[in-house]
Image 1 (cartoon, rainbow, N blue to C red):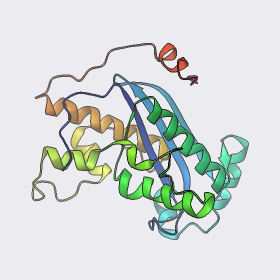
Image 2 (cartoon, rainbow, N blue to C red):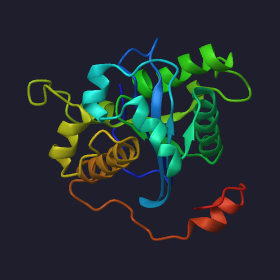
Image 3 (cartoon, rainbow, N blue to C red):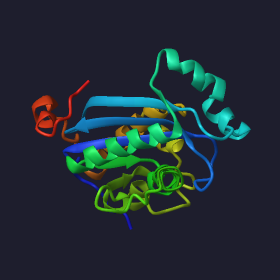
Image 4 (cartoon, rainbow, N blue to C red):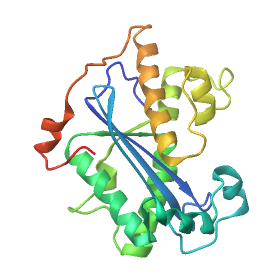
Length: 222
C-alpha cells in the first residue's frame, strides 16, 4: 500500500520512456526522459533517443508518432544512442541521482519503464541491475498512480487512473506521449497531489540554487 505524501522530497527525478511496444519482456525503449527538481523547482532535464534493434509496433507508433526513420533523422539535432548506449546512459542517470538521495517519480514506472530497463539490461548488457554497482530495487520510487490510489481508494469514483486522467484531474498540462514532457507531467501531478494531501496548502517551493549542491557530487547543471 502506497503512503500518502504530505511533503515534497528535497530531490526528485522524473522518469519516463517511449517504447517499441507494450511488452516489457520483448520491447525496447526508443526515448528516455529525465527531469530533476529540488524543493519542487525544476533545474535540470535530459531527453535522448535510441535506434532500437527491433521494429516499432504500429500501435506504439500511433501513440508517440515515431518511426525508425524518424529516430535516425534526429541524429542531426538530438542525442541518439544505440540500445546499449541508451541503457548505459539511463542507468548512469538513475544511479547518480539515487546516490544524491533522489526519489524517482513516474506513472506506472515500476511495472513498465523500470521493468523494461531491467530486462533490456539483462539481455543487452548481461547485468541484473541488482548488485553492488547499482540495484534497481533500492530506488526510492513514487508512482503517481499508486499514490492516487492511496489518496482515493475507490475504484468507482476513479475507474481509470492513467496519466492522462491524472493530468486532467489535477490540472496539469499533459505530456502528449513525449518522454521528457511525460516525466515532467508526472512530477507536476505529484506536486499537486501533495497540495491536496495538505488540504489545499501550497507545497514547498523554496527557490534555491542547486549548482553548489550538485557540484559536491560532481554533477554539472546544464
